[in-house]
Image (cartoon, rainbow, N blue to C red; front, side):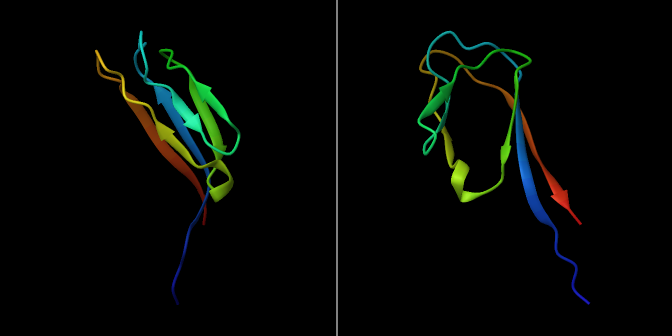
Length: 71
């Protein structure tokens, strides 16, 4: 018997502040989150929450990310 897990939530924690750029954009929600050290975002792992990272032109952006799954 095959066991599948369904990702239901995604999370991301910013590990550093970014002075310029580096936002995380949620496309359908038309919103952008500015990276702030310690800030954690949690969102549904569905097509309704497509997102992308905006490049930070002058520094690195560090994140920790993962998913919550139903077994």
